[in-house]
Length: 249
Image (tube, rainbow, N blue to C red; front, side, top):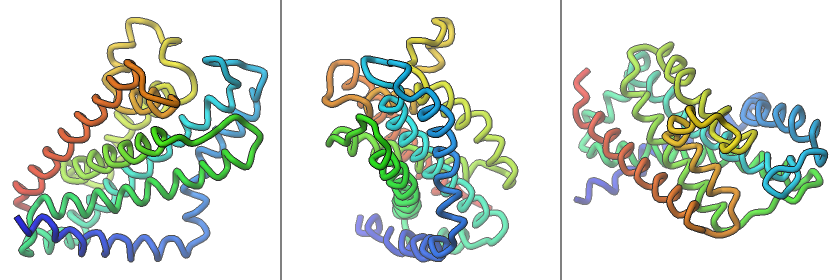
């Protein structure tokens, strides 16, 4: 049972590597350039001339960009790093051979992914406070952001374990992450989407993140979406731990 607490060396290793990246100016720009482009192109372009859900478009857009940014960075950094460590650098095999439980490896990788996702999200949040808008942060916003980072870090581990090559991680991203970024309520409400597509949209985790992260308090809709996020998170964590446990390469 105590082995589950041996996640810290895995997490600490990833944080040391992450600190080295933070010293590169290009990393800071790469973490926020895409959301900033969307913010300028859509938010500042439409600004207050468009009203959505009783507020101006800029206020509506910023929480969606925070959710999207946390998804992209939590998922991408974990999936890419784990895939490279497993297939090319062969450092992941050291973790498997060490007396560390699969759950500990999973926790260390996921927490590292959460830090990277939160870092990118904080950059967008800072920009959101700097520009004139009605953007604000609530305890529910913070809880949803943490849960979203946890969820997609778990999904990143799954992708990193399943991908047979580094190119496969881009394929998974194109099929799952990119559609979620554009059709899960980031840029416009889900109720504007045609009804025949909505069942697929509501299967996407980011849809439920965008629903909850824009609410000041949990109502019935928010509670259902929050429960869906928890279910996804638990399922992804269990499946990722199983993949690590059964790893044989």
